[in-house]
Image (cartoon, rainbow, N blue to C red; front, side, top):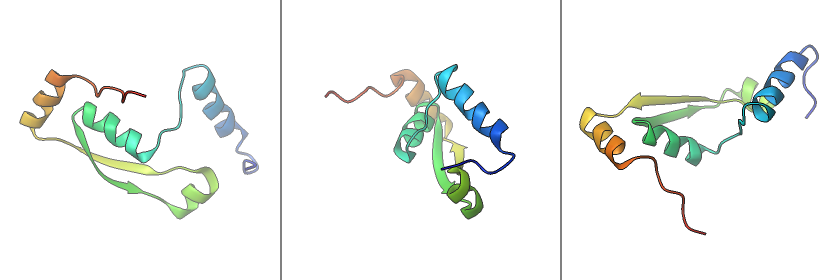
Length: 84
């Protein structure tokens, strides 16, 4: 998809994060797993038709889990990768 006119700065910023900082795009299930490992629960993914169709962006709404749940997550550490 071609960037909108005048949007070159955004495209270059995205490329910079991907290449230099080791960023990557994540699926919804990957975001859920990442948030849960950090003590959050995903509530909803907001897809703004204006953003999602033009630039592929969404907003993730997450809340802090109850303290007992968070301490369990911290003790068990990050989720383990599935064996191939």
